[in-house]
Image 1 (cartoon, rainbow, N blue to C red):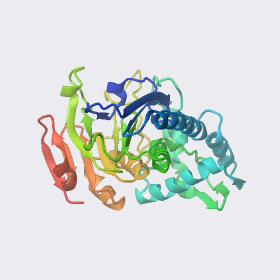
Image 2: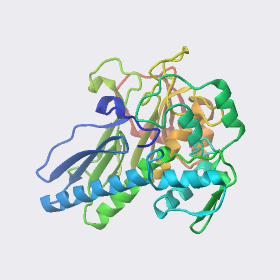
Image 3: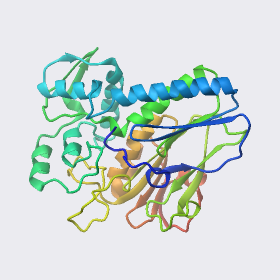
Length: 355
């Protein structure tokens, strides 16, 4: 569905943060389905069978509705919104996208515009608004022409339910925030319905509530450059998540060009809005936060910020728990995150920062 998400579904390749094995219980129920272009894994603990089945049906319906509402290139409310934004005339925006675009505007400014959902035209130019992997990069000229128009979420003005853009180059792509927002909605609904212990994993980005059999939910950060197909050896670190905490990762391995006419083996889908090209300097960034929507946007912004600017952007977005793996495979980490992780590989930690 969303431009930043992979279309080929395998847990090892698509997952950034992987759920590690945990003790099974007769009160634990699981469900798996496809949405947002990825595999959704739901685990409920300490519920009866009827509540589990009712919850699974509701979760599937909710994700299906959100998938349609926020899809950037298939018919639905977001596609219509983008068509109307291009006219630069005022219109009534669909409620299903209004709240998310409003939040995206705030988080974009907070990230110093490294998280920039307004660059949908640029992402489409690279070929990522398609179910097929793109084969060749766009021309330098085409990229330069789009960059000159400087599309930004600040170009969008909102008054109640009325919206307009003063820049015809604005095309909103919510792929950098949609999964986080979806998790917040669905888990809040689960709690209202009496589910107090759950984990929802959206292709490696996840949030938990409560515990798993009176233990913390344990997750693992995958190696962005795995050397084998052995899942256990391809884990960089493990983390115990607290009640209500989300873990989001942006990595340069989710969607790559099939054919590359450059020397870069990772011509990936995370586009730096300042240059128009895939962001450089980072293999992956993992962020922990209680707000999954913020964690989602911050993971993208920090990946683009890279080793030189990640501290500045993390502070600007009020993110305390960050693990960044740079292009050399070395770790840059916040002091609070460093206290929580358990490294599973020998990695050089070259920077530990108090945020």
